[in-house]
Length: 178
Image 1 (cartoon, rainbow, N blue to C red):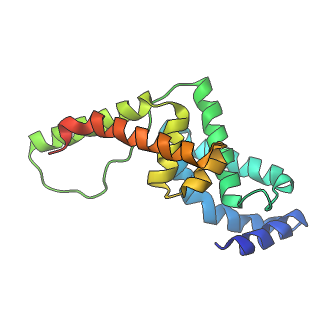
Image 2 (image 1 turned 135 degrees about the horizontal axis):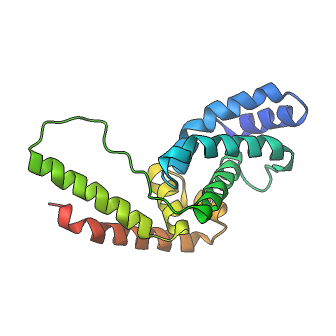
């Protein structure tokens, strides 16, 4: 959704047309499920995403498009909700296995399972901010500038942190790469 269209919808919501909030929910629910789903235990994703939308709706009067896009604003709320949840309860990261079902030998399937397990472990070993940067960049395709705005970091810091995370993950998965 174009930023100017979003800003028009947000202005209508602020003016009292609360039904227009449904457009924002439809636009962002998929990406919020992916982001939150990669930051907390899968059993809590739906509750946290709902909480993000409730918080967004309650705080929409505070959104100022001059300070950034709605996308970075709502992703920041999602990031903060996930961080608060993780502070209360440490849980493993959810990583979805590929949906494509292929015929493989049992040894290959075991190797893939071990690789995903090692990826989960490596992601769990990352600092929360590093994991957020990785998820936003690699799974959501956000620009470095958007990530810098969400994480309140300098652009160069985001780039260097992401590069270091990729090296850590690559090293952790090295035994599984042929």
